[in-house]
Amino acid sequence: MPRVRALGVHTVWNHPTVAPHRDAVKASASPALRALLEAPTSPRVWIDEALQLELHHHVFAQLGLASQDARIAFLSELQREAFRALYRTINIGSPGAALARMAAVWRHGHDTGAVRMASQRPKEARFLLENHPFLRDPVYRAIAAAGGVAFVELAGGRDVEVEVERPRPDVASITLRWR
Image (cartoon, rainbow, N blue to C red; front, side, top):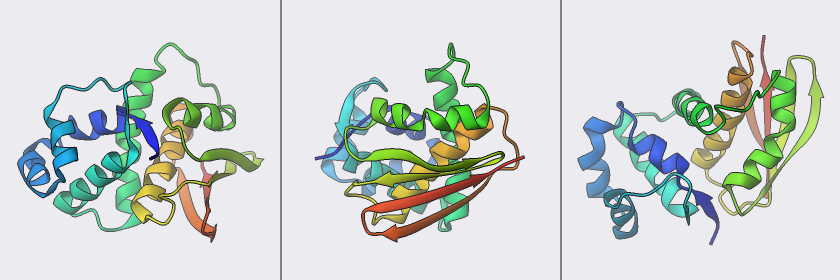
């Protein structure tokens, strides 16, 4: 069972856009997700990552976020807020320097899968998310891509464009370009 810190659940569930939809999300949630949402949980505790993914599916359905672009835009805003709170005392530097730390940030919040930088040029980077059981899920790939977008934006990158590809079943390739 892959585990993740509850930061994503905490951030999504407490976002003002989601608040009016909480009852509908809970009604469609599994008993395990409902129990997680009803219990006070610290963003730093480890939870079953399938519950976080399930929450994202329900929230996207309630908000009508069907496209990859819409999901990434919504999630990058939330992840910017979460990263800003989590790393408020850390200067993340330039977008390239921030992305160079993606592997360490991933490992801090996930116990499964790996992130590695595949290529980096000025105003562009491509990183790979590998060996994670949820890579088949487009919502999961949107979550990972939004994390990269949020990091670039927090480090001063603007107008971030993202491409998400799956060159192999066990790999997601995420390319970011910015100004």
